[in-house]
Length: 110
Image (cartoon, rainbow, N blue to C red; front, side, top):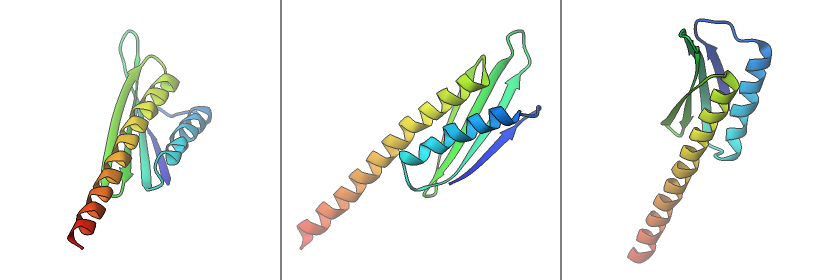
């Protein structure tokens, strides 16, 4: 799985990049078919300075996307990874159901 981390409008520290890579690498245990994961970190300049993490995960030609906005990058990364984990498990379950349906149809024709 290729992991790309992009920091928009700022330069991310190595500790933040390492934390993000470790968090995104954990996604591979939920689905083996992940081709790549793109994590984009940005922030909105405001009084409270909202930190945004956006992830795009490519699985077999399908792109799963999630966005999280919190007051710290670590929280945003954890939240977005949690959201995309949920999507990956649902996606994997749908794939299994489709595969089972095809097997059932072929068995009934024989």
